[in-house]
Image 1: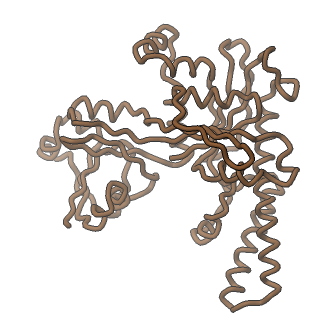
Image 2: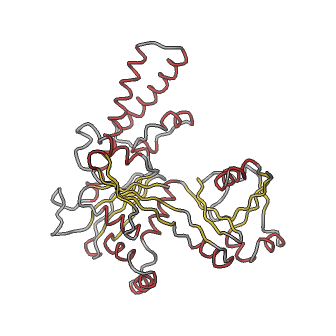
Image 3: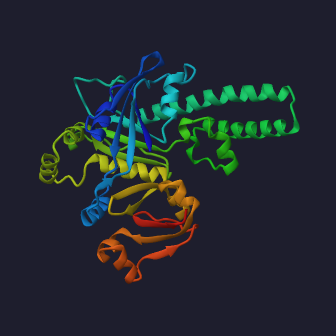
Length: 362
């Protein structure tokens, strides 16, 4: 899972990146034009995986991972100037979801470029920039499609050209009406047609409102559309960055002292899974206890393929049990003895938090 972190200048975007990664940027890259991108890979916190690991004592425990990209270069007015630059557009488009940092903290030292703190205004600005960027890409493609249509071609080519043109014209109307593309209804064939475009407003979006340390300064959260692919989350960026850089024991004491339930990373990852429609399932063995990521609604056969293509190719059955029931039983053998371990076929829909063991033949 790759998540691109974007925001207007002075929004605290890099502070949020450090809060999520503990300041552990693995590398800093520069794209064409001097565009700066920091990247870090972070283990997905999961208490269920930790509980399974404590119980079964494997040689190693493998968490799912998320890759964060701190992408600089987004500013007001880029869309009106002809769209985002190629390097910036490419860096943002390669992500599975966007984490949009909105400033909500006051600072006399770091003034806001607009002269005031207004989260709703800044979110609207970023949404407009992303829509204008998509429209710029779409306009160029529509122009090429219309030129191609005027030259004829085979019947199959003309039909494919007409279908793509009709789809892009419909999506253009949505953008002109101020609607991002992420919730526009698409058939499987239309989704395939759009796969190579990387439209920015088609991506799930997590809005992180970067608040200051003093609750008295908190502003109302910006309103977001009623969509399963959009979420808003308040975060005290500076505080979370300091917590992320503490030793675990010191951070735990701080959390307990100030009655903070969990680190921001846990909240951000959970919200990211929700907007992306992802779940976790687990595998256990003497060598390894591991968390795997799967799209909600995918099957036991998809889970097998996620683990290894050979398991999918030779799939016979999946043995499935909820992780907490397995812990209660104490072992797969005892769960099997109690009748708690279910045998499921290829089409079984895997649920979040299940332990899956694939029976297969080579």
